[in-house]
Structures are given as C-alpha cells and as structure tokens.
Length: 203
Image (cartoon, rainbow, N blue to C red; front, side, top):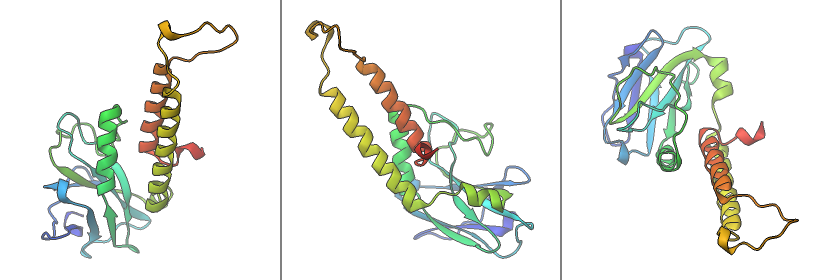
C-alpha cells in the first residue's frame, strides 16, 4: 500500500513518502505544520483497499514532550478515494489540552514511536463499517465543542463570582458549601472529555 497513498498540503508538492509501521499502519510526516489549515489524503489508484476495508486517517500535532496523540479525522475508501480535512481547529484543541491537563493518548499506531517534533498523518487499514460509525461529522462536532465550551466557561465564571475565603465565610448551618477546587477539577475533566469527543454528553 506504500505507493497507493498520497497527501496534498495546499501550496506544496504531493507527498507519497509513507513509512510502513505494520501490515496495516502507514505514517507520513508533515513539516512546518503550523502553517497548514487543510490536508487532502487520497488513493493514487495503484492498489485498492482489500474488500470491505478502508483507510482510517489519523492526525497528530507535534508535542516535544510526549509520543504522538492520534485524532481520527475520517477515512478514505475505494468508493471515496480522496478526502479533505481541516486540521487548524485540531491544533487549537491540542494546545488547550496541553494547558489544562493531559489528554488521553490514542495509541492506534503504537506507543513505541519516537517523540514527534513535526505533525504526522497516519493511515490505518480497518473495516469500513467500523470507520463509518467512528467518523464524526466535522460541522456538528465543532458546533457541539463550541457550545459545550461556552457552557463550561459560563458556569465556572458564575460559580467563581461567589467564591470567598474561609475567613470571609459567615457560618450558615443550613447551607452546603463546595470547595472551588472541586468545581475546578470537574471543569478540567469535563473539558478533557469534550476535547476527546464533543458528543460524549449524548451517551
């Protein structure tokens, strides 16, 4: 499959120099990824996917302190041999995750890969039916993420506006108090889960 896959970054030459990580996993590096907004991943037409299989397209932004964290963008298949993916939003999510706490790492390409200093695209050959179920709708996922983020910020700011120190508290036996640190922990955990899957709250 090495000669069957290609990537196009706007304004650059076509890249086809995928590395084979295993029988079903292929990897390519994207240099200077900070200036990349969209990528196109495609089949060159030399070799089709096996019957019933497709290529899950994963993306990882560089993190000099950790192995790649793979995010599923979508998939390509024999009936859909090319797809364009917006990745600029993923960088924003990755930066937020690094600031607010560690995001759970998706080791779909293995944990023994060297720490990456450039962005990477991985293609994993998987059952097409499974990829169709996993692939999120880009528009709705982005909308749900923004909606959830706004609710989080509004709730946290509202609660924080009532915060007082222990010395400022007036004893009120019938009132229940929750430490602000507990709300902060909930906020961080909810934000992490929202970044991993903007639709998680539907479950």
